[in-house]
Length: 134
Image (cartoon, rainbow, N blue to C red; front, side, top):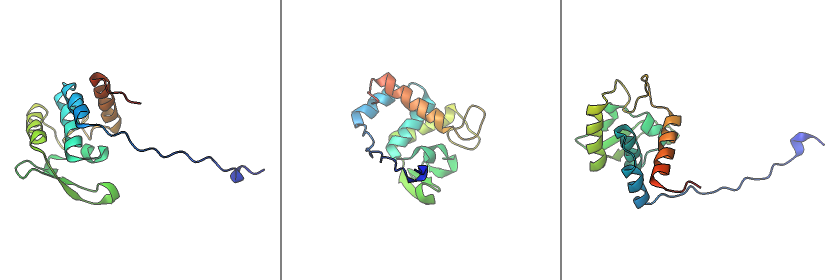
């Protein structure tokens, strides 16, 4: 029998776990680092994907108009989303504490913050808040 003729069993598709507003509040309350809290709040409040938030630059944020311009998001399309008042306030604090050169969230040595670092921040925040991850 040819290996190309063997059919693999289909993997069951599962929906992602939805995190409630109360759980988000617990996560943010248990994230003391200003950079990490700003990152998580921006993702949640604006409905951003990980790659979208990691590629944001200060020129993409209109603090006075409460808008975020997402460039080349999913499907390589641009879109605008609202910037919540709480995210705006936290971003202003964050900008004063962490002046960056290009990206809003920069890595330790410059450049965009890594996807892996974002994953670790989220996992640590979940653990600290006592939210089950399974």
